[in-house]
Length: 169
Image (tube, rainbow, N blue to C red):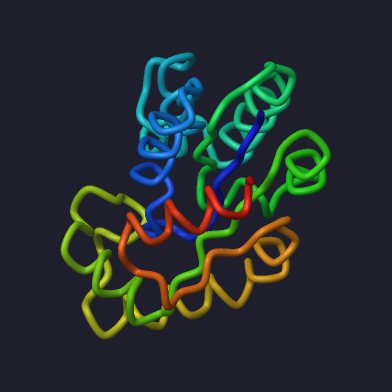
């Protein structure tokens, strides 16, 4: 079984992928971590040093390689579905699950750990919410292509995990 989790940063992709992979006894893959391992730099360093185009090309290359593997739970990067035909490839090769969260929920999560996220580390509180809203608006059409969606009302990880498991039955 191949499962790909997608959603905006702070939506819980990595933590839920970890729970799901353990529960289903499948390999856990995190696209950003795999890119960092292959390139020897963090995502933010790659973008700063090599540019976003290089990063998106490397992301695409590694994604297509992963999608050839037999079984996995994959946490995509927040922007991965929005470039090339990545979302179509993900849907063709795996069960895609969109972890939808409200702007306020995302803000609450991201405001606490923004220092660890270079894309938003420089933003003031009042600008962060607007930044999230703008990105969600731009990315929603790609996220909405997912095969299954976990509602923003389900905030508890266990509840979200059980929704996915029920869907997979």
